[in-house]
Amino acid sequence: MATTVLSRTLTFLLLAVLAWAAAPPAQPARAASLTQVTSFGANPGNLTMYAYRPDGLGSGRPLVVLLHGCTQNADGYFAASGWRRYADQWGFALVLAQTGSANNSSGCFNWFQTGDTTRGQGEAASIRNMVAHAVTAYGSDPARVHVSGLSAGGAMAAVMLAAYPDVFAAGSIGAGLAYRCAASLVQASSCQYGPTSRTPRQWGDLVRGAHPGHAGAYPRVAIWQGQSDYTVVPANGRQLRDQWTDVRGVSQTPAATRSLTGGTTLTVYGNDDVRLYEIAGMGHGLPVDPGSGADQCGATAAYFLDTICSAYHDARFFGLDGGAPPTPTPTPTPTSTPTPTVPGTCVRASNYTHTTAGRAYQSSGYTYANGSGQPMGLWNTYVVHSLRQTGPDHWVLADGEC
Image (cartoon, rainbow, N blue to C red):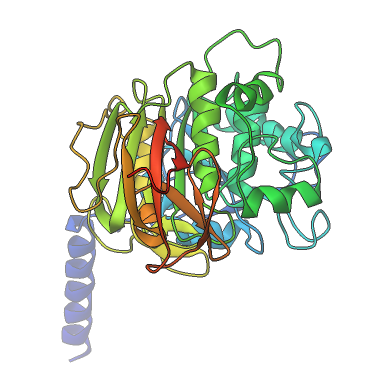
């Protein structure tokens, strides 16, 4: 009896061993996660560095720097922005810089302080040193470094593109502001809530002055702007467009226009040098589009708004999907919201219609003509004005002329 039991036991163990040997090895649990980097070099801006490297990522791969908005942090931005999906899918590293209340009471990057926005100084220098560390430690390709940010982080992305055009190949600015629109907290508020009167050349000169010795090409830029953003008004998107088209040496006249999902209008300038994404009805935040589709990403949260996956479009604009950056096919502007393009055109409509058609913008409930900034009164469907186009995206009041 004991011999029989022993024999059965040995047989069972033998079969178990054979089954284990024949079975495929279990897949290892995912190890990649957002990790704090405690030492990355000089840190004059008192920032914290986090990094994400997908499992198995080799050297020579691209790098994207992400900059969060006010009241946010690196972990929340990493979780909701959608960038992790494409880092895993297309193989590139992420660096997330984080600021805090010690630098700014609202946890904002100090995009308006000259000591933090000048090449080699403050927060800008800290972010540059994070890039240098990643290139050395992770083997990231120094020719394929990009930056993207939201709100104050978007404005700081503009700072990095201006101060370090020799470091970044391209960038994305979400609900941000033009470089050196402000040089103090008081000026920052003025920039956020209303247009600043500068020509494209004057805007461009501010960027060229950030690194006067730069002789190479300037980064390509994508700009994202909600058209119902009352925190960083839509005029800022157009000012960024003026600044970077001038820096890139291309016309402010659109080369192509496309209608995308989420009420998004994409306008392209030059040979895909500058992109302006304008999202109808969207407030202040980063565009995301939760879902499983190839062009869907992110999670909705405070300042992450369900409209369109900006990370997908930016990653392709940066060329991170393995192909050349796509050039959008020109399509006619939708007939439901016509935007005249011939100088001299005169249109009479309500203030609301003028803004939705792109002839005017609203700020704090009031309407202003694009380009000239002339006040037009309350933003509603009852106040009616005539506007005449005198140049690309430049309109003047023309009551009695239409």
